[in-house]
Structures are given as C-alpha cells and as structure tokens.
Image 1 (cartoon, rainbow, N blue to C red):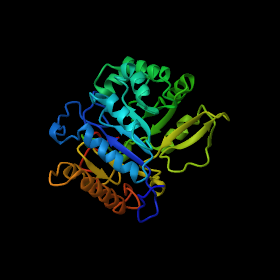
Image 2 (image 1 turned 30 degrees about the horizontal axis):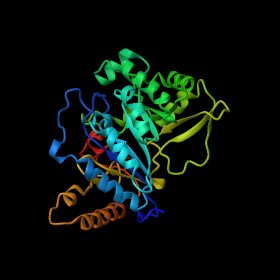
Image 3 (image 1 turned 135 degrees about the vertical axis):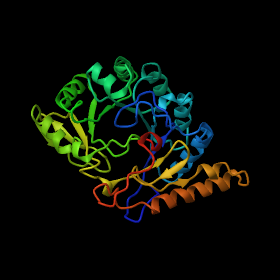
Length: 333
C-alpha cells in the first residue's frame, strides 16, 4: 500500500526515473538539432545513488518504475541497472521508454536482466519523414529494435507517436494499421509544451479530438471502461479486443487520477511533469556528514514533501500557466 498520498487523496505508486538527458535523436518537438545544453556529468546520479533512491521509493509503496531519458539505452550500464532494480526486495514492475536505436542489441539482455515491458517512440512510417523529424537516418534501426523486443518477449510492446500538423498528421490510420499487423499497442500523444526550442504552439497542436476523428474515418472505436490512473484513453478497435490509446495531456487532462512522481537524472524529485518545483535528493546522497540510515530517512522525508506539494492539476489550460524551465529531455519522458 502506498504511503505517498497527497492532499487530494491520490496514492502514488509509479516512479519515472530519468537515467540521462542525452539523446541520440533530435526530434523537433523535443529539442533543436544543435542542442548542447546537457547536464554536467558530475551532476548525474551514479548507479548506486539511483538504487538507493529507488529502494526508498519501493519502501514507500512505489510498485512500478519506468526508466526514461533522454534516451536511457545510452547509459553504458543500463543492463546492470535493470538487473539491480529487479533484484530489490519486493521489486517493482520495471518498464522502459526508448527511441529504439540500441534495442536490437539490448532487448534480450534487458529481458534477461528483469525488464518487464517496453515503450518505443516512433512518429512516422516514412523514412524521409523520420529523417526530417529526428535529424537522423535511423528508421531501420528502430524497426529492427521493435522486432528484437518482440523476439525477447517484452510484451505488450507499446509504440508512442506524436503527430505534428503538416508533418505527419495524415499518418494516424496507417500507423494504427501497421501496429495491428505487428501486434504492437499504439498510443498517440498530444504534443506538449516541453520542447527545448520553445516552438510549441497550441494553435497548431494536433489534438486528441482530431486524432480520434482521423482514426474514425477507417476504424470503429469504442471506449474501454476502467481507465484508472492510466494516462491513455483506450478504445477497442472494430469490436475486437485490440485497442488504441490517445493521451490528451493538454486538452483532456487526467491529473485527478495521477499516481506518478518523477526523478530527474541529476537527482531532483518532481511531483508533475509540468511542475517548476523540484526537491533535491542528490544533495542528501552526497552529504558526507550523514550515514546511510540518515540519508535514507531524509530521502523518505523528501518523497513525502514532494507528494504533499503536488497541485490538483498541471494548469496548462490556465491563463497563468508557465511552462517548465527544463525541457522534456532534462525532466524525463
């Protein structure tokens, strides 16, 4: 049972853990192609520091950990990290979100180490569009990575797609057809105001309503009951048990059931992806005046502080909303 309950009665069981802010792609809705404002290496959490924080989180009722980035598979010891988390007493369910570029070589080792499931980001089925969106000619590597994830048994394999107006917004039905053919679980995500380049514009964002309407030109979609704390609204497809998800972070906020906390790669706890407040746990871990028990007690207290400070919603639709100073790559997707 979670001990991390905020003032609105939301019990927190899910921790998103960013392993690095580095990425091997330059998706236009995330960062400029020449982005170089990386977090200094000395500020990044070590593997031992990560494990201490996750162990404390599990003791407080966290039962799912999602490894993110940047691109988490750029972390040289990613397989070791997965194995060590999987070895924690009462180990959490362990998932990972990746761009898929290193997945062909790492899918099986990750599965062997204890990874339960994987999310792969892919916004287009067209190689030239992929190059335009990411500034990298790596489409074939993503496809190979997806095949490797399937061979390794990392089910269900979820594919996350962001649609951009005038770029790939005509691909929704084709992406769903491809996902169904390959037994992937597809989720469309509204573009969010978290890009390092500051190009987000609500007026040109492809909304959840638009995505649903476009899919409905080819498929009959029926809502799935019992969404719980999932960020995605799921829909049965053509009367089957196959589903597609739409995450309307901007136009259809799901804050009321949110059970997620976030840990950045430089050791800052965040109550919300869109928060501008952070609680420093790296400072505690590097305080040589404390012993291990004292550090863990203080980290526990800082988890509680983070949860208690959580607002009822992200406020994107409020006129006073201020986008986070950090981009998505530095917060953790």
